[in-house]
Image 1 (tube, helix red, strand yellow):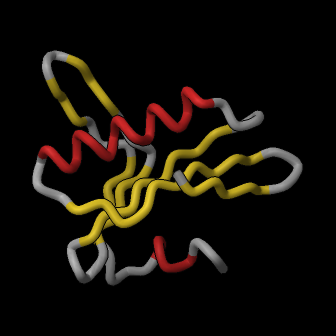
Image 2 (cartoon, rainbow, N blue to C red):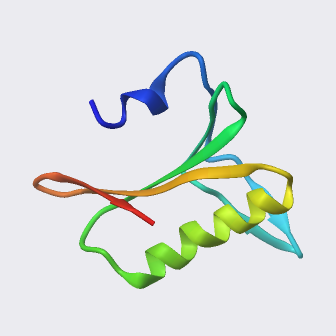
Amino acid sequence: PELSQYFSIDNIIYNERDIISKGKLFRPDRVIIDKNNLVTILDYKTGVYNVSHARQIEEYAFLLEELGYSIKNRILIYFNDTTILKYI
């Protein structure tokens, strides 16, 4: 239920779309643009939280901001025995 707003048909959703910056390729798992033109980035992981995961999703946010988007949320989603959400 907490994530249902990010799967609404009212949003523009980009799954695993490439972003190329300075010759490097970046591919966020899910980018959601809501009706207010605010962006949420979801990145799916397994295992436990690692600071490198936060750096990665922050880099995605920076790239999208450079493209003119306003970032609302950055969420790491860990799939293990339970699902854990970590807002960055």
